[in-house]
Length: 334
Image: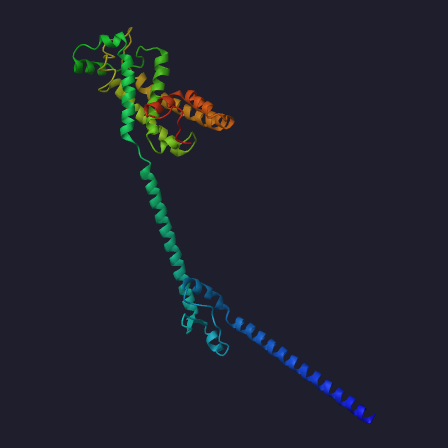
């Protein structure tokens, strides 16, 4: 019994000693962990400028994450940070170096912005070069329209009667007779027929301008500038039709003789044709946008009906399309 009692006592002492040893190991590991954590916190507090290293990493691909040396705190107080290059060698990068890197990065950003601006400017210039006016087809279409008009005039007896006589002398007399407002024609010809003529010639300009033909009716500066250019084109064409080398003044000598006491050559046609004609052109643009594009073309599902409505709602545009070899219902803005 004594032997058993002694063994029990020895076993209990042994267990107590082992438990105390394990406790000391855990306390030692815990203290080491706290020391390392405190050390890292102190090192981060001493080196607040480390965040700027990311700029160096972005600007120079050869630099890696910073390695902070706990054994040299004095250098860290001098605002120095150690970085490793590709070969694993430590390099000191001072705060001023970071500022230089930031400046270099800003200069690079400015260079990139300048490059983008230059590229955008070159793209705009290329676009402007593409948006040109096609003179040859415009003159051809204007010539065809002029031939159609003079063809109808030659069927009139008053035109046929004035074909004889000295060409240049009678042409000069007809031009010199230009005065007043009334030319002897009726109201329909002066205020309906001639404006339609001006709208046709203006549409010829629009259809042969890469920029103008894509514009729809709006209050934009580009739209109204293009239509004013069309009016100027129509004014030049109207002057040629009335007074030029292939005009009413030399084919039929309009103005050489008075008609019913009125002068045959007057200012009414020269003014009304381009101004009111441009108004008719703009009116067709409004119909094309608000009636055709925004209403009928959204409502109708039949392409045939849409083509018919386009042709008859804008008859002058359809006529100019045919002059240019296009289908009557063709549109350049959709």
